[in-house]
Image (cartoon, rainbow, N blue to C red; front, side, top):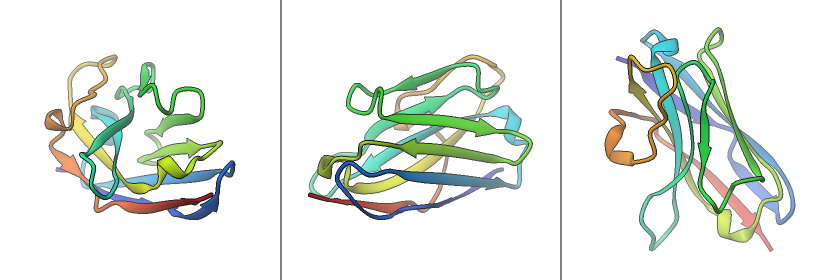
Length: 127
């Protein structure tokens, strides 16, 4: 089974950018679809972005569409989330999640569909 470790979080001013990474080990990463979720204090875990196992299909929440970009590098066993034009409302702990799938195109938008999770990385956006 795959293990996931996020990195790249930090403190940034509104309008700035951050690039999160999710490093995978222990599995054939090209067989996994991946998603990013965030959890802010007092809120429920929220879907951010997802990518299919072969990177051919992506999906974003309305809130981050046009500002965030998800990408997957199967050769390096890594998924990135490029976050631009950050807003204070983006402040949260960001988690990557992976799901083993035989589908090359399917993306998963529900947290219940993912079996493997990282420990999270904190993103704080100041106004």
